[in-house]
Image 1 (spheres, rainbow, N blue to C red):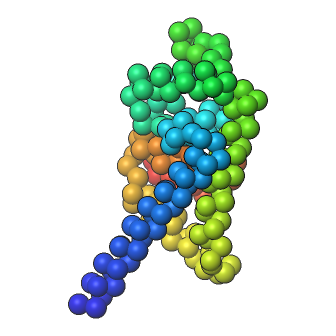
Image 2 (image 1 turned 120 degrees about the horizontal axis):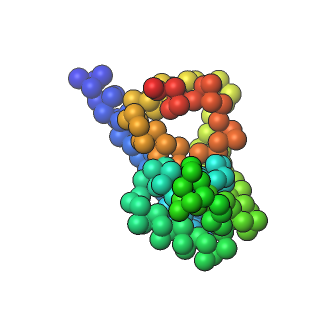
Length: 173
């Protein structure tokens, strides 16, 4: 019975921590740049992958095509994103890129994200940090489904900090 209670407690605490991280990140994004979660994800994805098409962006941020078009239109109006040349052999599909202002917002969002995560991980010593890293690398693939879900989970990741050879998501296939 004690073992079951320990597992339930761990599940409860892990769930609460997950929500706390998301809530704190969304608040930090809003405070830092005034953008909502989908706009932040779009800016981060375009900043990490210049030249994305709207269709590819749509898959990464898990919106419908029409919602993604509206979001991109809004980001263009704000001066954060530019629609460039055709992409993938289709002149109708425009390559998305950040403006200088968009690049600044991209960097500020990543810094806000990093600040929230550093606050949480800062409570750990170096051995605990290493152990948590190993555990998270083991747990994360259990939560992610193959396909577009792999991209959605990483929608606000700092790809410059990602070690592709060790990424528990990119090695699922």
